[in-house]
Length: 175
Image (cartoon, rainbow, N blue to C red; front, top):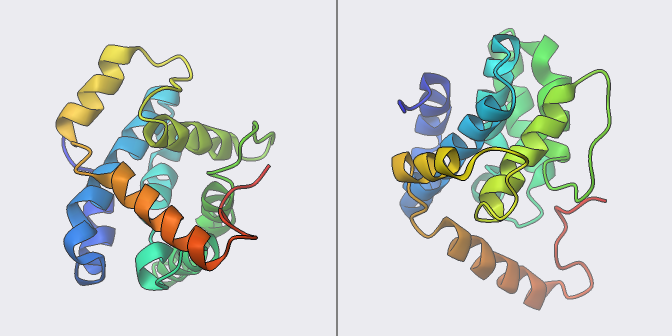
């Protein structure tokens, strides 16, 4: 499983900001992207999945916050507009804003939003949720792009945020 060139290009720009977390976030982005492709092989949505995968959590580092969805959206929108891809901005924004939604995201306009939500849940749940993808296929994603402590990183960030904001512990979750 080769790295997606668009994910590599985007995250390369953020390498210094990601610092020691670069490889763990890069691998997470690739696992999410590849899970999207396992759930939806439509080539018309490949680019949106790659861009959303690269940007969906980037605000943790660019804005230094655990309330990272709005800064992640800003970064993705800026990227898309600078490259003349503004027509994708609303769809990618929805993919980012709703990727932690607990229940199904229902839309006729952008089925990619629900696919992306499922793909991220697959990875964040350590593949406890599979949404029908066979376990061997998911194991291959982790073999190709190891976890590298990404989930421990998220738990530490969540605990730190909870201690500072006990009344708003997980700002990224939506019903």
